[in-house]
Image (cartoon, rainbow, N blue to C red; front, side, top):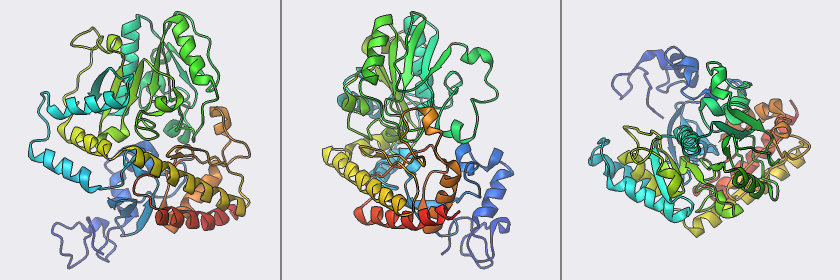
Length: 445
């Protein structure tokens, strides 16, 4: 099989580079990663992709379709990463590809308003009633950054309260005690963030309602944390946070970058019945392309420029390709789609539980709608401290055993699994069969 970057003698592709060829007409993951590391810090453009937490060399993806990705060596993997949840309909879904292709023929960026960005904002408002106004941007990190700035500007206060283990992207003020990539890399925060950037950030334990005062501009949290494994909010917790924010006049920000449009048409706020003042989105609304959004109450959102004093701008915000892809992706997500994904998540979780039990592995596999978590620990996690009891060394062994089986998980023990519309019964069953063999191998050390 000849793939991009192949460079054997006689290759039909022009411009081959022998540096990365194994002499078989197929590129090498190891050689490409080594070459990448010579020009990209760590060889990756997002830290967790480097396999630091699990060891080894990353596979380099050449193409993808449906529930599968193929590396440059031609190996296929059943994919539960799905671009960390952005690919809800499966890779290269024909309707999304068609929408992107059609939009590209009209131009890729204008620096001017477009009908599609208006339509996507309307679609978000239709599904999420708390979003009376919506501002599009380029990433989930930009969305959380903007939401924090907006909350401070709207309230005239500085302090932000966040919960340990909730990850809100590469935001200086919010990196303290973050889950996901920060936890995976073993960092308490990150170098390069001055003390002043986090001086007004208060970190509190998840599932405990914090006591606030009038210095707090906003409380930000993942209402369904998916960056410390999958941790469910305790009964009454989110309502308690809402009430405490109301008591002191602070805003409540839901980071639904992962849960938004994945667990339900209206996000997790639809499921839990708690209405935030601001909501951050990403992932699904881009159909696989970079995008983010902040939505919320009209009075708060209109504090953004050009109406208000809180600045936000971005040349590529509302990009015509990303909005076309997002509209196409959302058009696929009806009630039947959510019911199907929830069923597949339950099927996956049940199979994994059986596989771990048969291998004698202590594990919990929580499920919320279409999100599936993995905790390799005796007890279920209710907060970040408990989530960190997961056996990361076992996860690393299981991760590589699954790769050998042709199943791709995220290279970090704090991520969740993302079954989507492309994960049929046969795909789920194949993953479960692989998990049984991988669990036994990992348990044997």
